[in-house]
Amino acid sequence: MRDAMMANNLEYIVSRERGRGKVLVFAHNNHLQRGKAQWQLGADLLAWWPVGSHLNKIFGDRYAVIGSAVSVSYTSEIGQPEAGTLESWLTSVPEPARFIPTHAGRGLPASEIASLQPRSGSIKNPTYFSLTPRSLTDFDWLAVLNSTQYSRGGPTLK
Image (cartoon, rainbow, N blue to C red; front, side, top):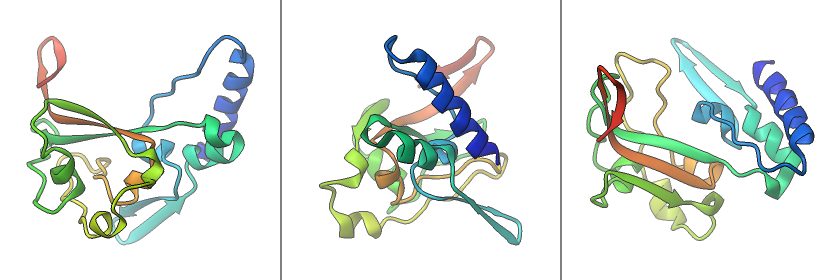
């Protein structure tokens, strides 16, 4: 229900802003992705169609979505990604931040992508979800940071 209501609200906002420019929305990857969302919560596997799947159906090619990921976050107790994971692959280029076009997976080496394993999660933050090979088809772009570091002045990128 929550994601369907979010999609209805965003569809209304887009209709109100028509002719004035694009609409930028910030939400958790699982809400904005095109494919079905899943969350293993204890013994229960929750699955739902997120906002992104509704908006993709409504807007088609006019819906563009950017997923985000981090290699390390000490505050959330997210350690280095294990070898063979998507985050490890994406952060192998020595940059502090990357903006990577996935083009919804078109043109990417399917067998190599399928062999990537999900990384371990966060002990401290159960709402952290790592990228999966499907992330490359659920998003048009990925914004990937090496790490996040929090200071008294607020979050800083490292």
